[in-house]
Length: 118
Image 1 (cartoon, rainbow, N blue to C red):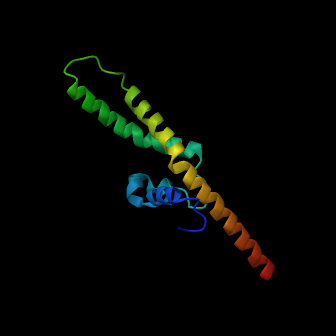
Image 2: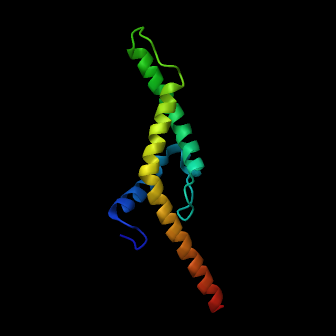
Image 3: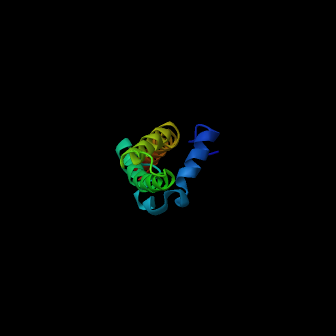
């Protein structure tokens, strides 16, 4: 475990969020490790991801409903977005931001000591 990780859980969450396969086509939107993951960035990425999968889930619900009443088209993607955002805020988000804060602080300290040596 690296010195900046608070726990084994943080290490696992950060390992998961660092994997390119998890990000898929959104890998270019992932912030640098020393950059915090803001709520607005997280919500916009999650909304983009969940709108696609929510519409696919709408399609699956429509196929399996056999003529029964269907939810409005925006309900499933919105619900999926809110649940995923809440899960992110409770798991991956805090671990990422703790690491980002500590890495940024370390980088600032190293830059400051290099200036003093020069």
